[in-house]
Length: 369
Image (cartoon, rainbow, N blue to C red; front, side, top):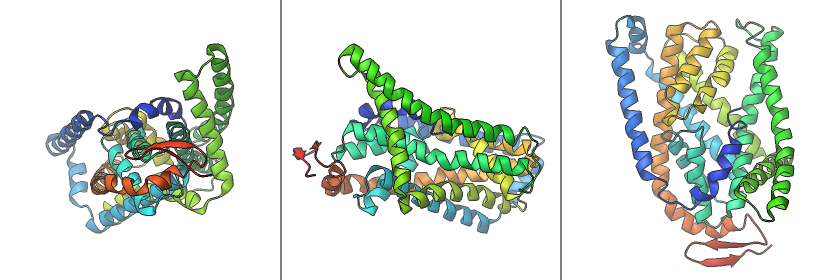
């Protein structure tokens, strides 16, 4: 659901971001400093504030083995992201290059806000630098956000209905099961309808202005992106399907692992539903989603009758892994990225057969169909 609510705002800026290799380094620096300050503040709060003794005791008894499991799950989730990235943007890319771009994106998402747009902007720059057109990047970015939202939306529907009819273990009222399921189902219908509306609106704007305006281009990217997403699903690429499932499932299981790290885990279905709804806090535009995601997850889990102390300890550990692991892996991947792009330019350009593309250092090249 996060991606479906953001696609219209992300594609408008893809063209500009794709041309910027430095990508506002001062902004990244500020966000890193902000992250460090917030993390130190949270540590000081937990350490010094009276009344948090039970939370401090819980954190002190953490299991290193279960945290290691969480780290492994985060890496598997990242590799699943890479599989989705390659399937959506260019299956002709080498896996190594796909991994370097995808893992760099995840690292950027740890320090850039707006629900994953920062990381995808890094990928847009890398693809554009290697010859992919801005138009393809824009529409495939929309498709990527939509596709990575589908497992979340379907998960809310399945779990919500399952809790309502008593299939899953755990305590969830009708309002906390059917309402999220209905909203998620409505989001699917709305997104498909939005694609049709955007295409018609783009055509009307172009006819009225007798040229392609920026708004019309954004609407066309939205419409084409939704069409591309449906096409990619119908193609049944096993790497795409496995990647979509793994990207979400491994990440949810990190929260399951961090609950076990502190000695007690609620029913797995509760963890899943709490995660899927609570992660919407990541839409708040703060670096790394700090604050929004944390409070969203803790609050949602508390609504489903999970102990506040247990939820807070598990979520804080989950969020620490979700920020530190992608950032560390992303930095390493980014060190090799520029060199790989030079070798990969022709393969990436070949993702658009029959067109002319400008490859940095080689000029305009016509790609054979």
